[in-house]
Amino acid sequence: MTVVPRTTASMTDSEGLAQLVLEQLGYGMIACDPHMVVLSLTARASRILGVTCGSLQGHALLPDLQASVREAVHEGRPIRIEPSGAGRGAYLSAVEVDDGTPVVFVIWLRHEVVRESDLARTLRARYELTPRDARLLLHLRRGRSNRQISERTGWAEATVRAYVHQLYDKLGVHSRGAAVALVGELLLPEE
Image (cartoon, rainbow, N blue to C red):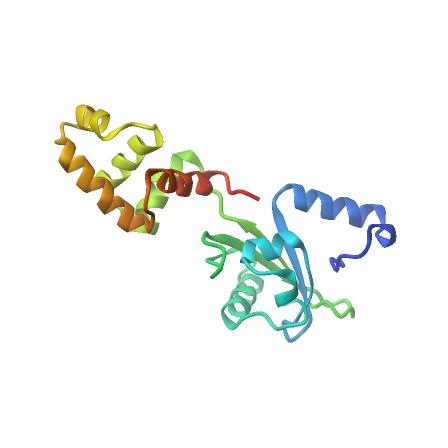
C-alpha cells in the first residue's frame, strides 16, 4: 500500500478513490521512512497536528509523536494524542510497511469526536469538572441566561455568576460563546 500523495494525473483510480474516501471521512495521512522522517503528508494531517505542511515534510516526527506511532504499530489499535498546536485530541493509527518502498510507516489521524451521550463524562474527565459544572455547562449550551439558570436550579443569581466564572477557569475560556464552542468542537470538529 503506497500512500505517498502524487498528482491526480499520476494516481491510479483506486489510489485516488482511497485518498478521497479517507479525506471525506476526516482522516489525514502521513508517510514516513524508517527514521520517522516525514516523506509526505496530507493537508488534513497537518491541520490535525496544528502545523504547516512545510514544517514537517523532510523532518523527523517529534519524539512524543514517534512514541505514539510505535505504540499504535505495536498495539494494533488507535492511540489518543493531544497535538500541541491543535487544541483538541486526535486518534493516531499506524502500520509498518515492509514492501521495499521508501515508505515504512503509514500513519492516519482523525480528530477526536465525542458522542452526545458521552459528552458529560468526557468533559468531566478532561477538565476535572464536577457534576455541578457539567449541569451548568448544559444550561449554557441551551443558551440560558444567569437568571434562567437561577430559576431552574434554585441557586441565587450571584451564585450562578460565580459558578460560571469558575467554569470558565476550568475550561480555559473567557466567555459563554467560547465554552459552548469548546463543547461543539468535541461533538463535531471543524475541518
